[in-house]
Image 1: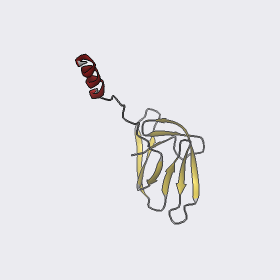
Image 2 (image 1 turned 180 degrees about the vertical axis):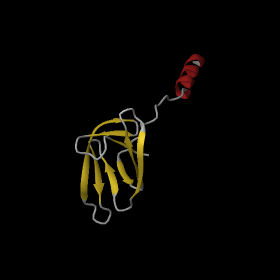
Image 3 (image 1 turned 135 degrees about the horizontal axis):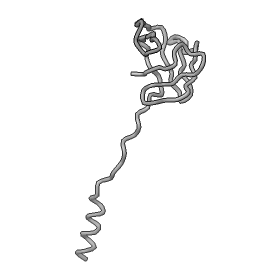
Image 4 (image 1 turned 180 degrees about the horizontal axis):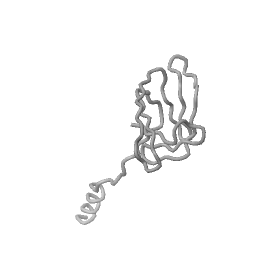
Length: 103
């Protein structure tokens, strides 16, 4: 009986090893600023152009980056997401930039 009690106590007191959920970047993001860079073939920065916006928000879905008007919630532009590496989205053809880094 003592052995059974110790076994049950050990089973009840074991730490539950759960993994932390993977953070997501999907959802609504307020678009505050953007930094545009131009590079030469060697990867050196030729120009840096900061932009500040407050006229729309981003709606990130698994397959697309949507640009939305806050007053009407209408979509006025879209970039297709081809892949994701951490907080960097690889954008498809027709996008103004090949990547978007969301922070």
